[in-house]
Length: 195
Image (cartoon, rainbow, N blue to C red):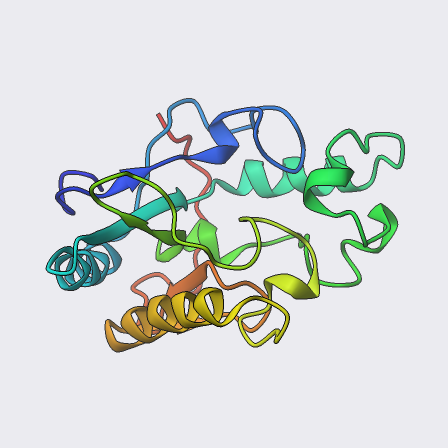
C-alpha cells in the first residue's frame, strides 16, 4: 500500500502491543497495510488532495485476517483480561463489547477494502485532533458526537468528506473507519497472514 500511496504514514497497531488487547494480534506478522487495488487507488486520491494543504493520511489498520478477528473474539470472551480497559473501553463493560457492536465474529476489514485512518500534518507528523483516540470504544468516537471541540469536529468532517468523495462509506460509530462502497470482494473473508 505504501508503494501505491506516496507519503502515507502507517502505524499498524495490531502488529504491536498498543491496541485494546495489549499484545500483537494473531495474523499480523509485519506492520503492513494491504488493500485491494481499487481501495488503494481511492486512498491515493485522498492523500493527493490533502498533500496540497500540507496534510496527509496515517493508517492504523487495513486488511485484517479472519484469524485476527477470531483472536479479538476469543479475547472478548475472557472476562479476566482487562489490562487496556482504561485506555480503550473505560465506559463499556467488557462483557458488552459484542452486544454494542465493538467486537464481531466477522469484519469488513477481512475483505481487503476497509481502512482505519486519520489525518496528519506532513511537516510534523502530528495527528490532527479528532476528539478521541483511535479504537476508543465509546460514543465519543461517533463522528456526530457533539462533545469534541469545533476544531476536532471539523477535522472529522474533513476526513469523512474526502473519503466519501473518493468512494468510501463511513461508519456511524467510528470516525476513523471507512470501506469502499464498490468493493471488489464483498462476500469474501480472507485469512492470509499479513507478512
